[in-house]
Image 1 (tube, rainbow over the protein chains, first blue to last red):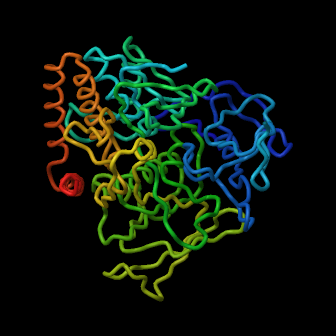
Image 2: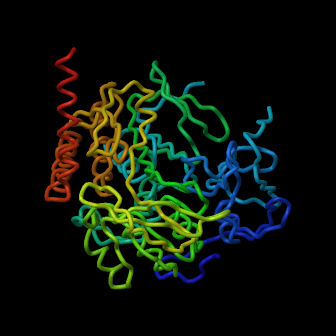
Image 3: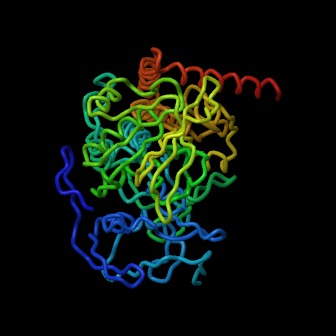
Length: 102
Length: 368
């Protein structure tokens, strides 16, 4: 859920855009990261671990830890905590290590 | 093509920005590389007011200090600030590479100041990988930078300053804080922060740890357990707390990859929270021309990081011949400010750490 009233801060979210999460249209804002937009919609499970298939979510939110890897517009291993939402962006749960396009 | 720069600063947090500002103020040309899109480092999410003296911005909210620094650096014609730029490697011939504008750029700096900050430590317990378990800084980013309510009900692990401050900020964001759990018998952070939480009715459970976390797809609750004087769990004291979020505020560790790559002598020093580069009084490493400032050389507060940045920036600019007399004066002043910040009981750990670092250095010199 996005906060509207905060005792200290005001938030500049930018323009509203539509992106796709596993094919479902979602609302986001241009100054938001994919992680923030998904969290606003209550989506905290972002993927599964490669070997034991355990659910995976966000951990560090600043691009350090690689817990939030997803496939974005066909590119795997994207750190969605430091990737901004764009109009029409396709965000998908990644299965396995992903194949890097050359 | 190789880009020649006088001083390269890696990281635009409190230490890096102050380093750039100080060096540029003496007349040096500075390039700052910051991996994030926003400069300011962790200052951008600090909504609380800082302590210390006025010189260290006491009484100002952290994010406002960050904004002011960023403005000064952006408006300084001697400084170029590259955001969205990740430094990738430090090579034997002194070349440092980065990813800038989707290009692999080679930089040849005369002096380099590493101000890469720190990363959060983790804690071992069953279920610690469930979605809903975050570093406290991540929750702070979600709520204070993105403006997203990060949780409904939180358990915070760690009653140091970060744990206490983030818990209070969670309350401000309308989140319930079920408990603050602290393994030590005492609250580690400032009591003024702890008192705010206690007044709001948040229990601070000292001598308790997380035994396990549970949940199907995301976190549904945690089991906490009391610890005895030897930090061993006491059977039969388990309690279950329902929560959708667990925040870990169990300390930070320096981000030192670039110092390692550059071949700087390193030492593990517990009081400085991990492996740190061996530095001299100018914060210069054992590789001439490479300096380290801020949390990257030992975990401390932002106020100390800012002074360290100033010290390293002046030392580097002075060494390049930019107003050496004035540089030396400013280095002295910065050293005095650091001594003042580190005086008193809360500075005991960092003083011990720095002492160990100097002893390690001497031992290394004697061995050669």
